[in-house]
Picture 1 (tube, rainbow, N blue to C red):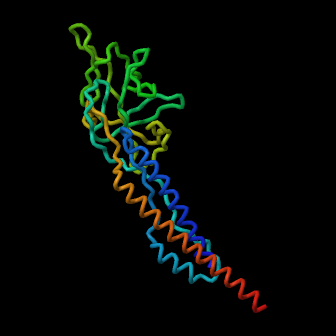
Picture 2 (cartoon, rainbow, N blue to C red; picture 1 turned 135 degrees about the vertical axis):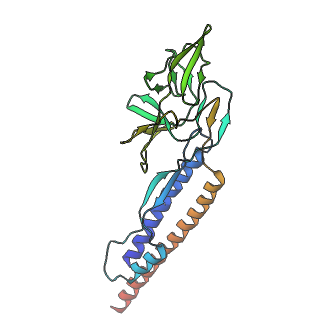
Picture 3 (cartoon, rainbow, N blue to C red; picture 1 turned 90 degrees about the horizontal axis):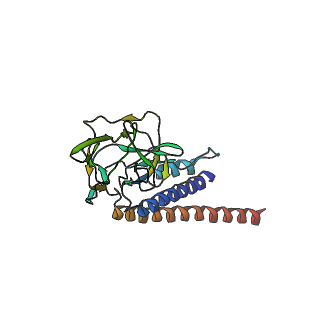
Length: 250
């Protein structure tokens, strides 16, 4: 019977992880470039089948609810036109590389600005990296091509500034979130080629969170949590009844 309780409690813990992730998604539903987080269940054994197997066990076997892991929905969000020359959206795969105090980090948030040193930086002040390093501007109105090439008009001459660097996470890698829309570097990252880069100047990428979908997930998870709580409560009541009857018959 302890296996039944372990499965119920483990399932409730998984539901709590789902609720945390749904809350995070809803909180970032309007955050530019945010990628929806998902809780993925490992294994394919239905919960009902696991409960039947646990109920039939006569000894403790270490049964537990199927584990869950975190994943990221990498689908591109819709693009929103801003008309700002330093707003850049990624229309396909890839992440901007930025320099932080802890090393390189990656983001899809393309709301850039020029800092006091003339560097192209994120809203939080991290330098946006180009293929040759940091990008320095003398004007806040550069031209950014679809391949990421940055040029600015100086007098009657178009001066090349550099090319924005875009990187790709390896397939199946789950990047660690650092906050402020940043992701930690992962082993095996590769640089996108010019034919793969699709940048849109004057646009930002919306979050790919669907609020209605998240609210549905919230309701389903809450109902499942309540069901598992009733299972745990019923198990506790049965155990209390068994102990009481054993005491009466002793």
